[in-house]
Length: 343
Image 1 (tube, rainbow, N blue to C red):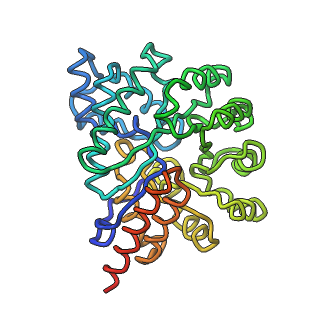
Image 2: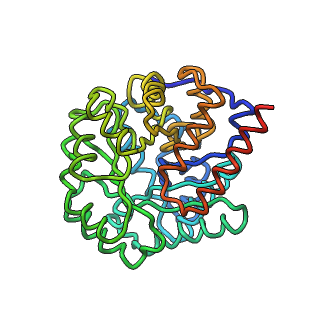
């Protein structure tokens, strides 16, 4: 199921935003993909950008992942990764995103011969340049691919240690089927000991969804959960999430592509249950819509008032891993925006 684009109204357009669930590889727009392929002498199996867009016809998570990983073939040099992150930073700044925590998948690159250093230096340099130029702040969250062995994740964690100052936390993504959170228990325990913050994907409507969320909450002790709307199916689990102040980073438009809908009713229920739910864009080049479009798509179906939209942004910055000064600056701007818009 897909969702028709919704117009971005003036309130959403001007709203200061914080994004916590964004895969940088998932921002590889067709035009940039063709440009990088041409620069790298890579032949793509598509005649043009329209043909590439037409290939984005998937209806479940495995179907999406097949196209997603194929797209990474054009990312080879430090400049490629720089250009990828710079393009997202410019788009985010244009949408009034003040702060973002950005997933990257090093194993998807090192497994095909791209050095870890190449990936992280290109991304970090672009984010540093964007902050100097526009004030947009982006921080990296390193994700492990759950369909690889835990030993590979541990080796990647060790590989990341010289770059800790550039990486704020670690996550877990890719195909969840047969790859429960506890598979990576020791990796995440080591990551916590090294000072990283922890999050994990619990994708929507997967087999054993609530059990996987329980593992993230009780056995891994993560700081937040990516997706995680199936927690609503277990009131006791939902209560633990609320009591611990754990946030859920939900992505409505991508939900509509790989499940039975945006999960608007569930997002509304989480908001009403006082869970720190947030709205994000996931992989916006593949699920067309950056964070503003996600908020616009959700506004009507979830009956979001202006106050609800402000609350979603407050939730995001409160569960972020931003420095206290960044949080205070964002919250002050958000409060001023809400006050002025209400006049």
